[in-house]
Image: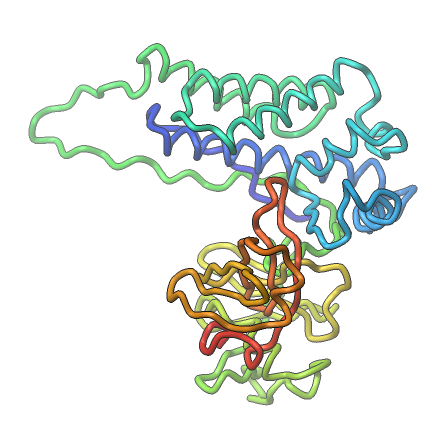
Length: 358
């Protein structure tokens, strides 16, 4: 068993940034709990890769509502809840039950999510308190794991509302102010057979101890033998190395697990950066977004920063006016959909704006 960080950040004030922080981490923790709870319930009958199989089934049977080019992440609570609410053959009915009250709670969570992501006014304490209450009701009714964390969030919001937080400590004028304590991440136990996340996602399994080095020339070498791993790579090693290190991993170090998964720390977070072997099928947006935005227009792609135009066959894969972004793997995706992203094409550095994928 390994742990996933499901810390719910407690707002320090009712400032919009503090409230958004609380909401984002609430839904992040809920999404992981929803996925892990489902995994424990479904893996014995459907196998550890039940989520990918379910999404594939939905894409084939209902491509209008579950678009084949769309990326669906298991820890995004809207994916599981949408299936649970709208699909009569949903496996989640066997996990959470088909009671009207439970499905009503799930609808409320989705409605709250859409409200938060499309609001025009600043969020309020009352809105976050309502979101916490709705999520807690679903968590408690299904025996999930993060109820105590939600209770702490609700308590903080009540203290902010009544003025009990922050409390002014009594101290002498000579006494310097104390800094806020640094809290350790709160972890949820996760099964060892949890499938790998999409490339770029948070690493979920044990982290190998051996660290491979990234050289100044972009090679990846074993720290003891100094031998390059290029001979073990399926495909073009230089292109894979570029994709793995497009965002420099901490310490210029990587690890490689027994199944060929490559990981590294991006900031303080361990991430899945790719595979020595072939990438899994069905990945929509591998890696991380670059800093560039584009728009498809009349058979051309326009870089919104420089205004540079490029005639490209990839522009015809998206409707004119579509906003596009590029990942470090060369996956060109549409970001106009309110419910997620879709891949338009995959390009190489030579096929794209100079310097945008190097």
